[in-house]
Length: 448
Image (cartoon, rainbow, N blue to C red):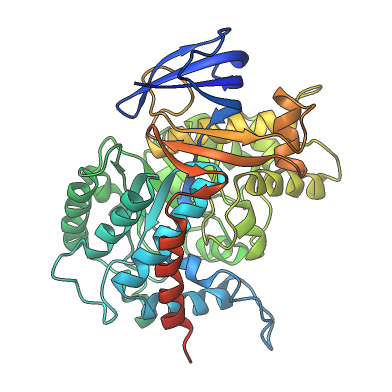
């Protein structure tokens, strides 16, 4: 049994003072508010729950900052995708593990304690299955184990290049599966994840470009209870192509042809009509928002205020992993609404803290989308973040959250994932070794 004491803790019932948190077997055994610290308690000023990062493509972290040169014809998502394919075709299993481990360490340093890995780099560089069809899934799991971050693995089914079941193109060969081979891949992935403490396996049809609605219907039998994630309506060109083929946009196509409910996460959902917003919110599906990546790729702006007024749930992810920051994702989300509507404090209720609404919304949505209860409560995994408020000692509670997300002076100090402290003094405990392996992989990938 390990005990922490914090002056202030954000519990499911709100902020409480003088809180003792007892941990046993990686879980929270007890929470006592209004108490003085015991002699052996580890002392902290402020503790908040760790948040789930609901959407990551780990291998793309190798590209971070390397796609910022304007092409002669202008740049957009589709030109960026060509560069992504080049990196995807170059990476070995060792490279993927090294890049994923460094990424996951950075996520923990940012306050993310679980990751939803939307994993579609399955095959060798020729597009053939490895001897172990789950080789790459095993490397993702190894990176999770090495860093301590919780893993919700979302094996991706990817079969087509466009709407209507168009054949894949050669650059997608490392992603492509048949329904039969994906069934074997999913089974192997589930076996790999079963060896991880707190591991969860779900299912991810890549998109309605890459999987038909008929195929999605068959895939759901592989994971009858786990999370289901799908990219949808990220790009205007995607929406237009879907309408040209099917007569409706991708969100409407999905809602009308799949049993979308509260175990689904619709990633991006950037371009929706009013009826799609209302229907998606009513189904209980989580909007998986990746505001930094969506801005980086020029995707567009999610209708956040409308979705919230409809009762919709949201979480945040880091997607292409160009920059890893929990407060950064929340800040970018809020600022996008301010720019779109030309107002301030767009997401908050009247008189309410914007930081608190954003943080608790992302906590709840991430928990739902990743299939694991989160929050500082008895029985949950002990996933927690202590904040160093020495740069703003006079602030507390909601003001402190607002300062962390929208200002400077509040930093992550320690992070516990399943009761183990993986970050101390703002740095992952194995950062140096992880950085050495990552740098070696990057030297190989960027040579020449």
